[in-house]
Length: 208
Image 1: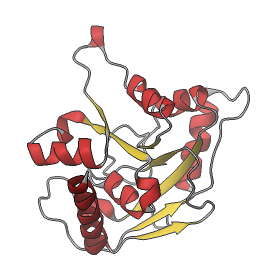
Image 2 (image 1 turned 180 degrees about the vertical axis):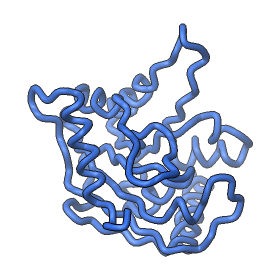
Image 3 (image 1 turned 45 degrees about the vertical axis):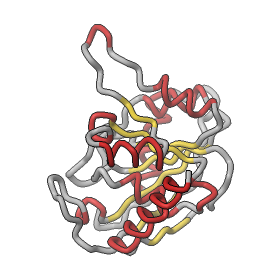
């Protein structure tokens, strides 16, 4: 485990040095309570930055959800994803007739008491605002009403690591953590997803 702890510290230090990241806990605060952090998605490094700004004790309880085909590409990247971040790595569906449900892995991680980092847009958004949310966030809320949902707006990381870039561009990044959400009794899927999406957009700077 010593190698994993050293790698975690090095990755966090590098992420903070490159981005000068500042975490703003606007309407919530760090807590050991089980949570799902949901954020806008502009870069493969999004979850790294969220994970890096959490207190060390919370990092060990928090697992990012990410694409297996990207994070299992190469031995170093795989080690970081599986051993350092303990990522919930989702494999793309092999075919329409046998599509794998990624909620199975996420539900299993939540059942073990872990918190998650998810990106409900489902893919990187290179434009303004937010894409429509996928339904997975609602199904997680229905299955785990005891879990808090914390919106996190990531500002500038898409400019630090633009698509296709190999070397990050040093820019200041801000992470704004919003008020916890919980699903309401009899709340429909469209209602919950719209409320979650609105809570995330409310954290974006006016220029966004």
